[in-house]
Length: 198
Image (cartoon, rainbow, N blue to C red; front, side):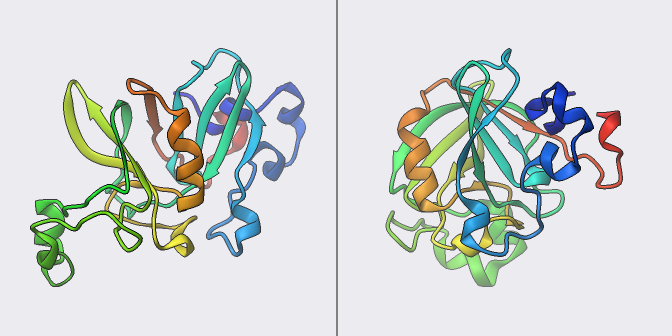
């Protein structure tokens, strides 16, 4: 299994402090300055154009060139609601409409039942400014990488499982992701697991 440490660490990082190896992993983000997207070095063998999501660290990496990726900070699903494994981007939409899933309505009808018929795209829509639709084996997983009108949720486990970026970040990411791009979502690693055991 590829861990975030092996994803972004170089040989020199093996003797570095955890913050150097892991980048920002603060829980939650305390200010906008801690959420600024940045370019980071990654393993050179990662496929250019691929996306890698580490839910435990609230981080998404879009590989832009061999050995380099753009790091974005994200919000993820509450415990037990995150997708895992490999999927592909099969659809992209600007200012997407949104319909809560049947599970969301069943879990919290007071919040979601009113939107059972869908909500048009716009500034208040939960999917924000852009959405990348994730498929596995030709089937819609119902998971998305999308923006949010609630940027204060970035760095938290609050969603029903989708991967949220700020609207500014998803607008930056959106045109750089191709249909068919691979997205890998990695399992969480227990917080007390030593960094050297990756």
